[in-house]
Length: 230
Length: 276
Image 1: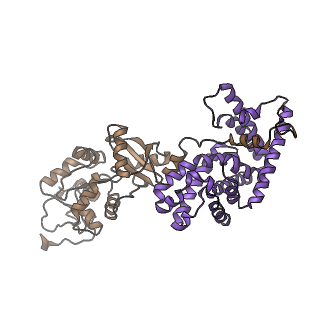
Image 2: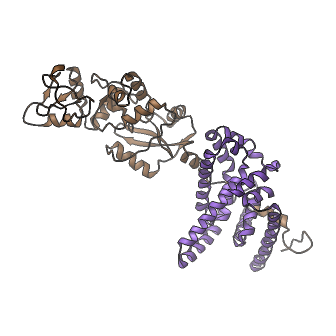
Image 3: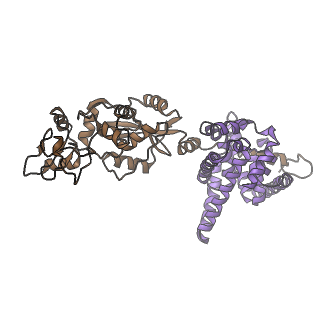
């Protein structure tokens, strides 16, 4: 729990980003059962998005999301009000999601023998490509179907590249850009110094870009990814 | 790649890569929040369940069954359940395991454990409702029996109103609790007729019970053992089923008296002639 406490300390120093859950920690401290619904509703998308990028299977991500909230509730129910009030909820929840996703991957790896692992990996790869087609949110539903299709294709590509990245870069990238946490919140959630996270984010983006260029050459087909995602 | 935005090398710049990652933000699947809240008992789901008295609506959450009622429509049930539970409520199928247990329990299988969620009830109400859970199918007990069993022998009326507000009828068998004079009495979910149907479906004989009550008969006893029971008690039914002699129905002739705790067979209890 050490890094969670660190999360609280550092996230309190950066109030700028925490808009949607402001005041929620106090409400949770006052009346957990009533305020918890607000926490679930405001944070479910973020938690799921993070879990989805750390796990291959969308159902695993859904289960991890649910489990994270159940654990969060039980933890909050055991905390003194003062401790709840001091919590930085977003990095605290993100840390729970990251830990659960890590445990699940570890368990999947240790329970499967070599052959099963290979099959699981291929299955994961398939579902990653298959499901990612469907699940990115269409940010511009009013746009043309062609543009939406290109956005989806781009999302599939980036999601696949992200899974290839080493965990030490992937985690901060997922929390920062998919989870939309601030750099200091990412640092708090991962229990890493902020400077380290900043460097890892930079290196991670560079590696991702390099990987993108590599596949781009492989594909020999050009995708106007800049224009689509900007 | 054609774009050379930074001029240093071709390909998207890092901001563009970051923005592309932002596109991977998703909406959580439908119902995730509801499932979490239900599991924690901070919200309820509800489903329809066929029973011997027709379809009922069953509200449930991770702690157990929270509310059962007959209602003409979903809307009517929702309004009632929300008023009682004070929590968010939405249609959600009963988890299969819970549904199976519920069906077995309502079919009379007492080994099928059905968890009940009685939060929001007073400790007294909870004691009454939990005690009522012990009454076996096809048997009835007077309100006074529950009052005595929970250590509040004078709170008979309060027992009655706690049962009238039973949020989980059928599972908590308040239909098996009758007036002390043996009259079946009121029933919150559909009135006395429903109570009668439920008891009949469980193998009790409501007509006979009421006939005995009208005749002023409170207990049935055995000549051979001197044991007296409430008329619906399985032991009393065994007495009556015994072929050789007529069962000793009566207001209490010599040598007979009710067991100290009505409904329990008072095995080994000697008849006390002095009271009769």
